[in-house]
Amino acid sequence: VILSTQILTCLFTNIVCFFLIHLLVLYLAKSLGLDSVGFGYLQTIFGVLQLVGGYIFGRFADQFGARAALILSCASGSIFFLLISFATNIPLLFLSRLPSVFMHGMPGAQKVITDMTPPSQRAGALGKLGLCFGVGIIAGSAMGGSQSLLLSTLNCINRVLTPMSSSAGTSQSGSLFSIREIVRLMKFPGVMEVFIVKVFAGLPIGLFMIMFSIISMDFFGLEAVESGYLMSYFGVLQMVVQGLVVGKLASHCTEMTLLRLSVFVFAGVGLGMALMRTVWHYCIIAVPLVFAFSMLATITDSILTKAVPSSDTGAMLGICASVQPLTRTVGPTIGGVLYKQFGVSSFGYLQLMVNLGLFVYLLKSKIPLGEMKSQ
Image (tube, rainbow, N blue to C red; front, side, top):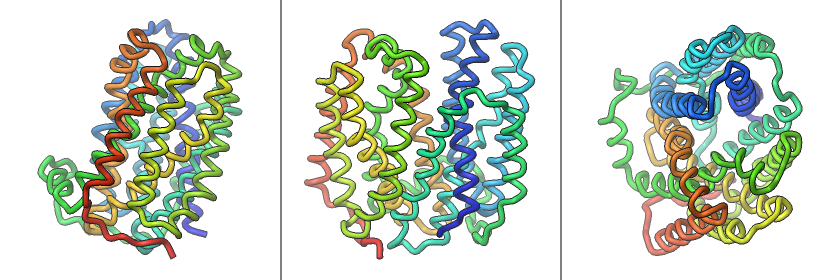
């Protein structure tokens, strides 16, 4: 059993981030009279803060150790929940977003795993950590709008009770944010190529998921309760894939093979999305979708952390963690245009074309990676 305390930490963080930030904040925004444009600004601010904070958090973990980084994440979460509890007007609601710049529990836990597992077992270990997100989806759907103060208290307790033997930071650079450092990491063999695949392979489905709250009502005709059931279904799929499938495949196949497989499956998912007409079609498509999404995230994180020195794994994980905030920042505008002008099928066709191109690129290119299987 690897790092049960870190997995518990990540579990709480994912439950809170995925549901309180997206459900409770939405409820508060409506109750305070914030219109759709204002809520868009609120989401954009959150995306920008997470985008900038991901790399800074990773550098912090490299310099001060994973324990200090996880404590910072939990403390930031506690402040966020407290501010949400007292958000009685719109300015306070916007102010409550500020601590989210350091709310990065998953990269913190990933940093611990990269420090304490040999490279040959990293993909399987990172896959098991992804179980937390699936549990968070299921539990959070049942929790709905649970009380912020309670979760703030749990976060504080979790912060105090997080012992770990991860080594202290060894990064030599004193700056927490440096463009030069990012460029240096991208120059390591294979890093830029794999990172490009990571960003673009999941971008179309990321745009779809950003618009899903609207699509679920307009296209599928779902009520809020039914959408919650659908998210719980996704959580179960994520748990199965991350806990049972990723590790098994990583022990029998090279990481480059799994990367190509995930991109190819993503292309098939795009075709299915372009042809789907009902929510039942989407439930079927969700199986390969969750597989490709989970496999891509786990394998690329594993490849990228092994491609850089151990003293820079935190920074690399921080850069990886910035991919989703980047999508959330630019996604509402691009996704809104696609949905309004071309309909739901446009997300599927974009997914198909992008991933077919990436698949051909991966077949023809010779990315310099240390090919190894989990033992």
